[in-house]
Image (tube, rainbow, N blue to C red; front, side):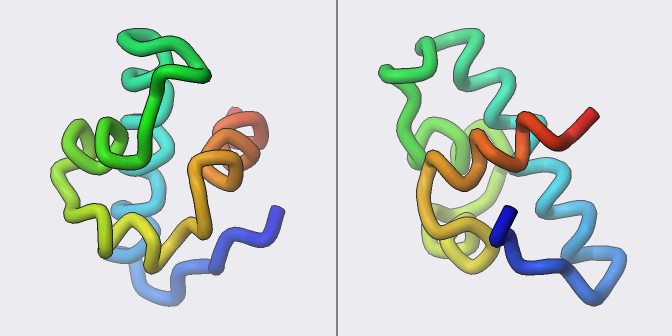
Length: 68
């Protein structure tokens, strides 16, 4: 997993929120129908902020696989 490791607790919370939003987005739209915009909206972050932590949707999916 090449996700940037957050240094601050606040950044860790943001990363976790994005990952959790990924699960919700996939439940709502399916894996192929989910977009980074969907994930960002559910997480309450801008798409630009999402890209500070993840390169693309596939990287979020990878983080989701390692979440539990």
